[in-house]
Length: 209
Image 1 (cartoon, rainbow, N blue to C red):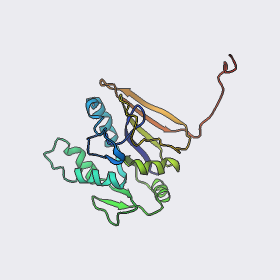
Image 2: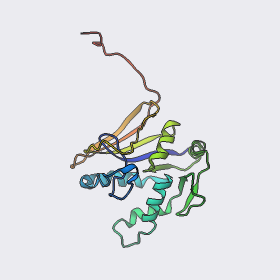
Image 3: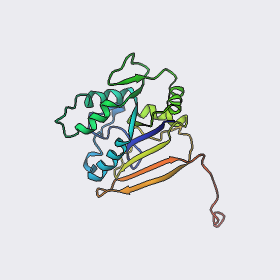
Image 4: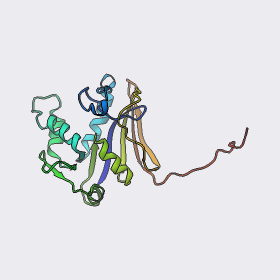
């Protein structure tokens, strides 16, 4: 079995769009690109690095495939992030796209039926397959209950607009917190795993005026 793990930078109001730089993803008029940069301290880097160290494959939407591949495939041995590039360039990538007809960067195109293709990936021995970026793809995975774990890096900023991880139409589900820490810059690093369906109850004082 493989494990589908979502690695996502988030604002406090759940926005995941364009964390790294202004031009990363300006779609829908988004003008806040680069919001994570002022808070990205050493502890955040360690959390991200720990996730990367166990990554054995990437699951990407078209935009994230083009952005990541366009950068990391060109990183040379003298670059400060050469070690990360070696991992990302080496591991297999699985790309969901309605428009691409071919891919490179050690990648494989998924079929038109993405939920079925990802379900088959989970049944195979592939270790940890991480999803980076890929906001539209994530909505499909969440709707079909195909995410096993969330590694969320939550930054102390609110934007009020932008693509969200848990968008409208998200299927209710329970999660279990298995790891958490706060960095010196105020970033919360948290790992959640699937915990079945949501359960409900009433507070014992709910009937009090």
